[in-house]
Length: 305
Image (cartoon, rainbow, N blue to C red):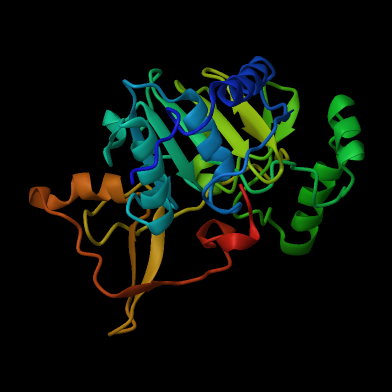
C-alpha cells in the first residue's frame, strides 16, 4: 500500500511556523530565531534543519538540487532528494543553473547563484560563541550587547600560537555590521560568496532548533585583524585532474594503486560540466587525504543539523 503524505510532508500549520521563523531571520540578518524543530524520517545529524526549511518553502514549480560536501550523488544527498521528490513531485536536478532551491551541506556551489535562487545550508552548531561560552542564556546576552570579545580572543589566541587563524571551516562572520554568525561548516573559500550575494541564504539547525538568514545584498565580513587579514584556502599551481579547472575549491586525493597525490574539483556538478568533450568524470579509485582541514571532515553523525 502506498503511504500518503501531506504536500511536502508537513502539515500546513508546521510549515507556517517555520516560514514565520524564516521571515524573522530575513528581517534581522544573522540573528538566530528559535523554532519548533520537528521529528523527521531521517536522523538528527543528517540535515534535518535544512530539510525542514526546504519542505516549508518549496513550491510546485520549484526545481530542487541537493549537495553533500560538493557531491550530488552521496547517500545523504540522494536520500534527501528522494524524500522531497516523493512528497512534492517537484523536479530534481544536478545542474546548479537549473535549480531554484538548493540545499547544501558544507559547500556553496562554484557557479554564482542568481537572485531567483534560494540556498539552504545545513548547520550543525549555529552558535558561534559556543566554543567558549556553554550557557545559552549567556550567549543570548552577549549577542544582545554585541559583546564579541570572546570570538576575537579566540582568533588572537590562534595567531599567537600558530601565527595564523586556524579555523579551516565555519570561520565566524559579522552580518550587516551587527550579529556574529556561524556560516555553517563551509570552507573559508566559500565565506566571501555570502558577501553582497544576489541570492537569499537560509540556514537551519535541526538539533539546536535555530533558523537564521542572510538576505541578498547584505554585508558579510569574516572576522580578522588588520595585520592578519582573512585568507582563503589557496591552490596555487594546482588544477583539477579531470576538467583542468583552477580558481575553484579542490579536494586533495590519493590514488590507492599508485600512491600519487592529485587534485579534483569538490563541486562535482561544476566538474562534470567542464570535462572536455562533455564526458562524465571518472572518479576511479581514490581516498580523501585528511590534511587537518575541518572542511574535509565528513562530519558524520556526531554533528547534527
